[in-house]
Length: 91
Image 1 (cartoon, rainbow, N blue to C red):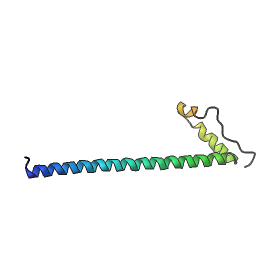
Image 2: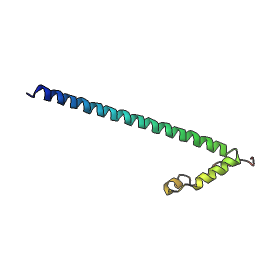
Image 3: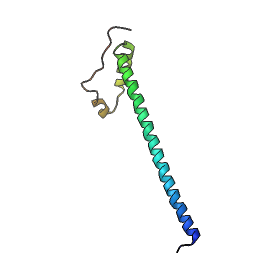
Image 4: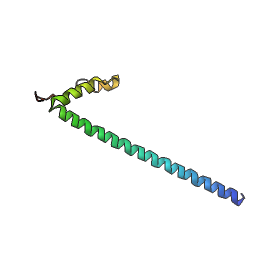
């Protein structure tokens, strides 16, 4: 039978490992929630920009400029055969 101190040390190591695992899970959940919030912000802002670009020339020009900055071929393919609505001649 192990000595009482050894058993106590082992029990403490087990609790420590469980606490570290729980902390890792909490950190992962927090990071996942932050990614979701970030994605939601981007979707909302993108929608607002597209709507504004369809109504005002200055936003349409800004959108054209932003789209010209797309570098990765994989990203560019998402926009093939697509163009945003253009505003009527409003300033």
